[in-house]
Amino acid sequence: MLFDFASFIGGDDVEGTSWVYTVSSRSLLEDVFTSVSLKRQLELDPDPNSEAARHPYVVGRVAIAEGAQIDAATEAAAAAVDEWSGMPLATRMKLGEMFREQLMAHRETLLEILVAEAHPRKLAEWELTCLLQVFSADSCSWYEQQMHTEFEHGPRRLVVRRQADGVVCVNPPQNAPAPSSALAVLSLMAGNAVVVRAPRSIALSTMYILRELVAPLLAELGAPPGTLNVICGKPRQILDRWLEHPCVDDILYFGGSEEGKRFEQDCVARGKKPILELAGNDCLVVWKDADLELAAEAITECFFGSGQICMVPNHVVVHPDVAEELLSAVRRQAALIRPGYPDEPDVLLSPVRRSERFFALLEQAVGQGAQPVCGGRRLEVDGTPSATGVFLEPTVLRVDGLTGARELDVVRHETFFPLIPVVVPEPAADDAALLDAVVRFVNANEYGLRNSLWSRSPQVVDRFVTRVRNAGLLKVNDSHIGFLPYVPSHGGTGLTGGVFGEANYPMLKTSHLQGVSICDGIPPRQAAFEA
Image (tube, rainbow, N blue to C red; front, side, top):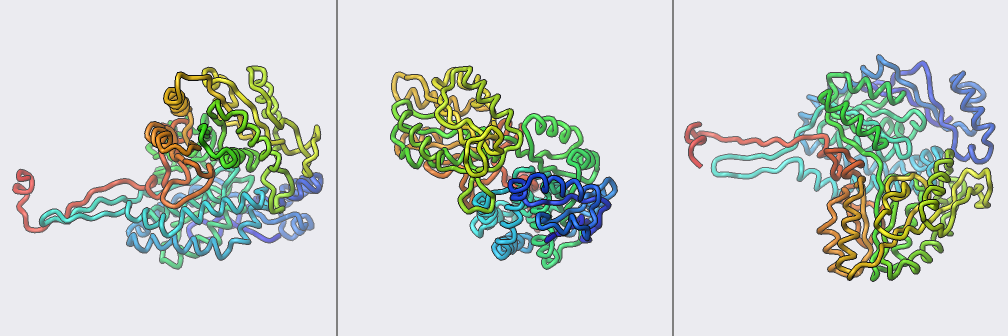
């Protein structure tokens, strides 16, 4: 066993009475019986010196926090926040640069942990690029500008700044806990004290990043104990205690849209700020003048991680004139997306354990008129079609007509499977009318994480960018899932971000605007009544 993490509360490692163990994802494909047996043995007997704990399949363990420890983490954050938020912004901003250096220095260890948690190596590298862009020098410089601006107005010094909200609690998702939990560093840079819940089923990468990489940096910067706290436990138990605790100010919640909407209401009712990262149902539009091979390459990003990533494309709208050519290109490129063991360098598919919903969606779509283009089978780890395989073949459907397309669940909602419907609009009077119809279709999406366009026409690009209101991020002739400095990596509108949804910069979302006027020697009545 390589890693052993207690709860991190108030600057101390606090041992637990129960533990969750991480067994390597490769073991589930090599010897599922041994893998499952090890997990069960370790749940019954968590002794780190036992024979089961010393098995080469066992990667590490994380302590489980119970009620008193959950509250202790919140109270430690509340005790630290005044001192930490009072530190100069320039000091807090150093955390971003230092964290980026830590990520690069510990790159291989972090990638190994992500692979052990079932992230294909290629996707683990992609997740790391997210953090390297979020904490790039360019991005951090922009964050700092947003946090503090000064003006001279006659004899006054005017300041527009953002102040920390206070205690921020973070509930990352199970599918990508490491990069999501690392967004807590931005909340720390804003001056907040933070409590992070490491997901119980996949806790190791979150604990490693925050306890091993971030906590020492905070100590080096002179942050008080309790500025960062990391615990692992049952999600409902921890979320309920956060909602009830008077010291909690913000909760950053990742999850499904229906649960997220209810959670948003619970937060508002208790005076907490909800910051929601929910489902995505991204649209990728391909116009008739697009580079179809590159557009097809971007479309097949929908299969990465078997579609179990919120920010991949979820449906495509293609100009009717190039629909057949695009579908042929997507079919060719989909055939290159293969399953395999997660440590193999070019594997992009992940196992899908509960695939019944996939086949139900596929059957429903075909029953409503969608035409299968390719895929639709279970696969073994070597890519062989099999009735019992744990992988799903990349699957493409053709849907004719914008009218009625959203009646299909595969178009209307995020599926979280390697399944992409390609919608071919009905003929329009001309291309201007067709583009208007496509823009209306994109804006009518209930979700709003990312949207993409592929077109060489400056007029088409301008109309799309000007008119599409939906989504926290628009991409044009670019990777749909790629990360860049300055622009947001997360956040969106509608069912993606709730009623307060927009592009999510956690440093800004977990702080609030405040104006300051500093004056000397002007009588108050003069100041009040003279412009």
